[in-house]
Image 1 (cartoon, one colour):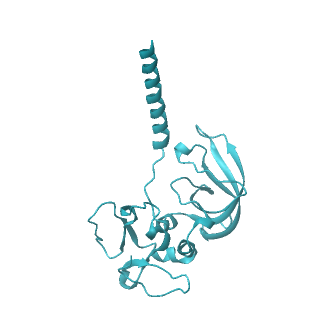
Image 2 (cartoon, rainbow, N blue to C red):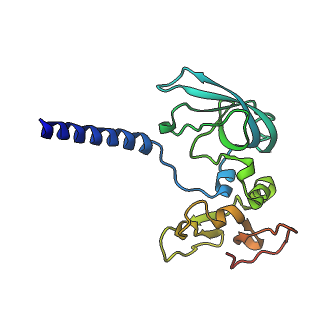
Image 3 (cartoon, rainbow, N blue to C red):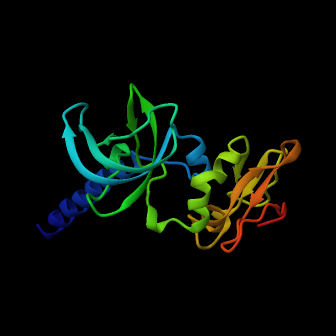
Length: 214
């Protein structure tokens, strides 16, 4: 009898583990530098989330967040003002959860049928948690590098293969993601189409770019 109970408990544990694995693995996102997140988004805003409502569409529904837009950084050609953000209600389907009346968020997303959609694979962060370089990037620097390609390096050796590439090595760090390049560097296009990492200084905004940094 005791052996049967152990078997049943083992089966229950395996089943539970599989269920958790399926839920967590249902949403899988490739790592993305904030600049790529900016360049690949239709809309980039800073906003405070002031309300939410579950809409009964799809298998799990869609969560509609009401936002108070503070500033728009990208997307003027799509819409002048964002009032609602849409996302899947289930995190297993990459739905993102925002706190109500707590933070100002940086929110990035795509526009479909006049609505802004976002998810876990987009770059959504409380504004206060962004580094100074990331805030400057969102304001103006990232757009200067949207013709550049940030090339992830997961294993050594890594090389750039064209003049418009910047080698992104955060994944090699013991500290993981987000790493130093994500928080402090932008990949900026220079003359003749060459791209290289740029780090602005906190005290002053340099115009020169060190192509060997970082």
